[in-house]
Image (tube, rainbow, N blue to C red; front, side, top):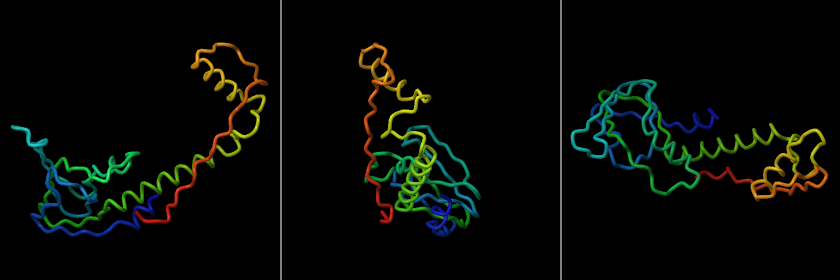
Length: 177
């Protein structure tokens, strides 16, 4: 996973007093600070009397709004708005992940996570064959489902029919979004 992130990082240099993003503007990149400092401040959407500021330095990042946007199962085409204004206090060296790269990394994460789970449970949860006598999982699931439907009748493990689940189609991750 780290390789997917590292190969997509792009070096970014910000000169002193450069405004990286303004509060309310769309966030289109996530910056990982290597050298230099940025000031991050907010008025919490223009709320009267509210002002919050802090310094971002080496090892910090900004643009985290993109993470929640990218991980949304029904992502919007509209980029998230920045909750803060971020300006360079000094010359800043950083690496950036732009929106397309974050979406790519997110897709790779789910693909890897899905493969990991399939590998972990392969051979343990074969839903196309009868349950093993000692497992009890299918019987428990059938009883639970019956109780949820309002049927509280005890079922014999021989009468349990486990339906075959269809595997979803594998997405194509070779196309860059």
